[in-house]
Length: 463
Image 1 (tube, helix red, strand yellow):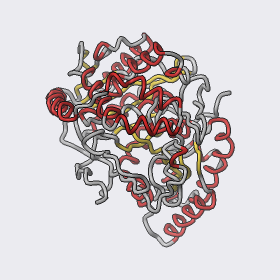
Image 2 (cartoon, one colour; image 1 turned 135 degrees about the horizontal axis):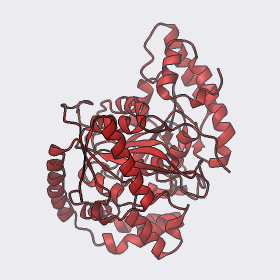
Image 3 (cartoon, helix red, strand yellow; image 1 turned 90 degrees about the vertical axis):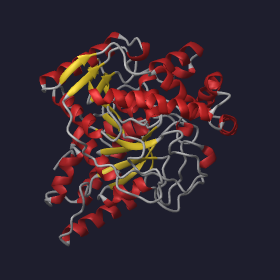
Image 4 (cartoon, one colour; image 1 turned 180 degrees about the horizontal axis):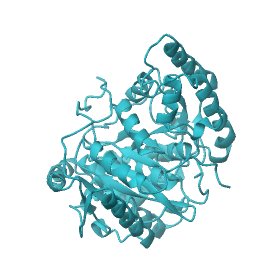
């Protein structure tokens, strides 16, 4: 069977489960695809073929014994280089951490392995996972396989580029201010930032910095189909005692009327016409699928939420972050910190957390009336690569456009990027948001949007 890398994760798992394809064949095809296209895009920055084949052999042996290999049995999956994988460096894009070799796996890795996934390789991110662009001084630049002149997104830019180019069927990413949702948008795939507490995460290879209620960074999946996002979410969200913020919330919540709030200009974003057109088109797809779509003038407070999320993200320990960035010498990380200094420093944690409680109540009240909010991912189409380092005006332009991504994590809400098509060869998509632990509503709406258009598919990188 040719081009196994083109299949969805669900299709691949089914073929392996039925013994029409072996896990070894799937792994071999994935490694061949990696070898063929990764030199052009630099999405995967560390992998060990012998380990990949060993994982696959264990899946084949389990199936031969008549055992259930799991929902992702034999499916090649990539993971971001900022989580622990035993025996690999948890670099987070840093020369400073090139020797931070993990002695154990993050819960994310363990839960993927328990579901039968084969970990194919580790994907690139910007230094400190700060930016919506993916370049660093240890692993180099990642290119967007659809157009090397535009960003692959960040910070999970390697994840987005890998899954778009058919290197693995699912990619793991992390998201604190759009780091899953934006690479999905930029690379023309789908990406879910789950509710804070949905997916257990912990890194033992690095000194601890809170990833719980304070800065709201979470792990989540990127994939080429919403169905694969659904499977990956279930696999990744299993319990693990190492994360004290993990919540045993069901993956399916109570039924709600299929009512969508559509907002074209949230928080004064003023999106470009192509972005507005994508949101409007997604609304029409939802209506055709039987959803009630109501256009609203604005959402609950978005800009204040984005400003406060930036403070929690960069203001907490700002001087220590800046000192580390100066030691690393990464221009992008320094631009991010220095460009935001007046926004985040000095930092008042108590004030930020008090306002978060108030704003979260407003958003949760909003989702009592609507199952889902439909709005832009970004105010612009994917940026020219490295735009944030061009000049001060460009830096400000980037941060303004990313308002819908930065704000949503402040309330701990789930957000799903759904790729909806191309403008020329530049991807465009929409963001679906729902109440806490209602990823099921985002996914249901996402499936309706996906079904109404042309499905995302793996591509050969464009020169």
